[in-house]
Image (tube, rainbow, N blue to C red; front, side, top):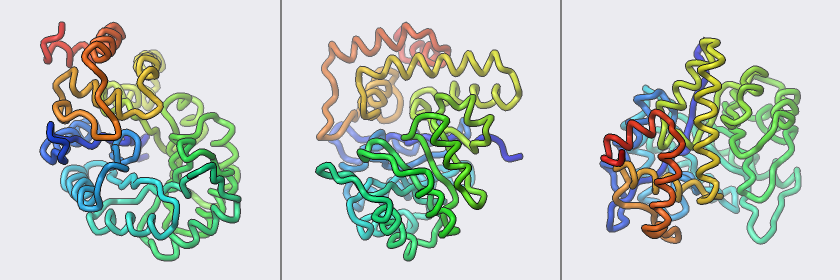
Length: 312
């Protein structure tokens, strides 16, 4: 048995002048590799992918492949697009860089647009007629809607290059069960870490955890304890992750703000450059509030980073 897959939509690191910091990116990704966590590169949320040029996207994919390929799954988490042709063009950038698979969202819900079932199916008909590389489908509430599980299953049944479905943007066991019931062939399904005690037991392949950008060892300990049947240890790690998630709610819905604050506070790779516009780094008072809150969580990995950064 291969074990539970862990993925994270990884941050994109910038230098103080807001250029892409390639060295920091490699160091950040190596932290994921060290804990055997797969990476989803340049998402529009944690990866600030919407701010990246085509050339920068290519470099992020190339660096991700150089650091991660062969050690952990490495995928493009290419920015959501309104047209299939734009998604095809971005997928080709990632494929040329050598990613294992491309994580592709449905059509972006601009100006209140919500695709019909037929429009959603046609969108992927266009993409998958041209992109034969392994692909994951990614329904996500940030698009402004969630497609029906039966529609995802129909796409996966029609196109063998669909290897994975990532449900990190969809909450609840019911959606997962409906999807599993509708699938006509084996497809890996990765779910949100919260609630994964249920969905992993129901057959989910893995979990997607944004918090791995900051506490990758805690995420790894959660999965290892779960796999070993050490329920108490797994629940302890899960509780720590939930406390961190709750602490970060103030700086959401995008995860980019809290991730970059944490990288800055703990002196981790990418912390010096912060966010890129349109995001702005919070002021010193807000960062101090963030720091007090995250240190009070009493999570061992965070306490260790705080000592290393001279905060405790």
